[in-house]
Length: 157
Ligand code: ASC
Image (tube, rainbow, N blue to C red; front, side, top):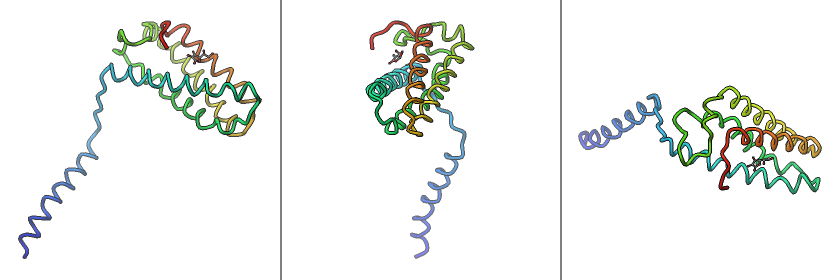
């Protein structure tokens, strides 16, 4: 009766040990440049839809509290954005200009302005402050435009 139990348990133990060592091992993710560009495009489209979807509320002076989730999404993307433009991702399918990598410090300064504007957007939405939201909305749009004017090719969206 002892043996079958051992036979049953050993593979389980080995499996558990393997799982443990895998989760403890350093992660070495590898995305292709194409996958990174695709993620940027998805983020751009979701951002534009989210931002555009806020416009009517801003113009009509509606309740901005329900816009907090979208604002948080924009703010989260703003944090991530600079990391999504690594060297080697200037593909023909990308609308990023070479200037992104040539003027990196300025590109990152533009991203920081987007981060600041979206942080204000989140704060205003959570506070239900329509006037502050409107002002942050303007700053967010200006931040989008300031970066796109310099670093984004004219496009097909
Ligand atoms: C967008 C987009 C931008 C900004 C900007 C807002 O949807 O693509 O660059 O909003 O036009 O002023």
